[in-house]
Length: 423
Picture 1 (cartoon, rainbow, N blue to C red):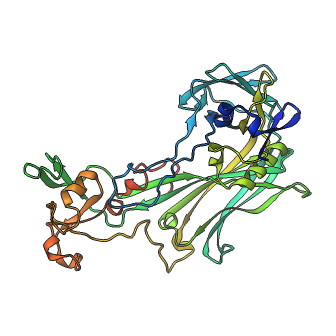
Picture 2: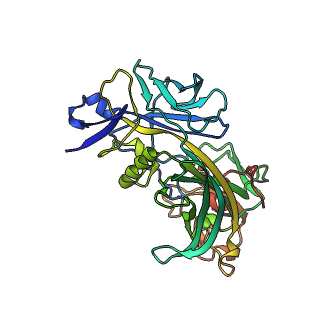
Picture 3: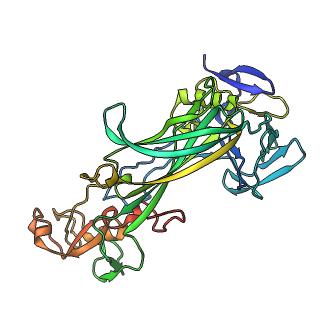
């Protein structure tokens, strides 16, 4: 029998999914919120679980398909809700929906350790919910984030990122770790020129088009990309007398991963949790290593801390927590660890040539005009025979080009250097 375990006040009640009405089981509220001791704009995420399988984003680059044309994961966001965080001291922090399902606090605020807060939610259908009281249990200071050359359990060489910390205040024994990694991208076949195609109406009209090679006006050689962690990393020092965290591994990157090829930075955040929150994430971890697990109906017992105000039994997924956070950033260069090697680029780049357009009976590959029109190639040079030695003579065109990903770094990141970046 499939069971979902929910927490109501101080009680734990098991309910069988097949006793719920069909609409409830198909659209349970999902609440995700981590309030901190930092004076920041705090965020609450509201969505609805779905029994429908999402389409997975295809992360394998194809040089023949325009960007943005593939399926992507969808989330049923909960819109139009009223969200307020209430303090036992009488303070109210109101939230406004910044985008579908994402609610930001109207003003920045920080939670104080030991002060209870309750999250209050009113959906646009009139149903009201509240969390169990939450409070920051303790604070632990990150003393060091560092990297070492090592091997993973599969014997692969790479770079591991570790964290050390020491408790400062309160009950700092239960931890969750997250990170945001930022890496530099350099397009390997970049040129300061690009195709400019105008007056082109597709392969059925190839008479009046204009094709020029012009100097670029946008920076697309060097970019940066930031990716947040999507795994659950919880840890406890319960039973350790000093309570220090020593050499806890938060990330391992194999040496052939292109994200460390140029320059790499990671911001590691340590969150001090309550015992209940730590237990929740350990249970969640046993189901999956993905934080996106909340987008699907949960198969089994998950202890949540949000419930209906009127006492009616209803599945509410996710968790609301208060944490004490500290964080630290480091930078690293690949050559400091593997001076004689260079990891491959994100795509196997190569030079190509093609006629400007092909007739329906033409045996040659897709014409250049069509590829330029859908944005799958970028200019490299005028045609040079020795750059494409295997080209079919009847398919040769006036230009050499490369897949866009090889000459335009904005396919993989942003051309805006982050404020924190240090070269």
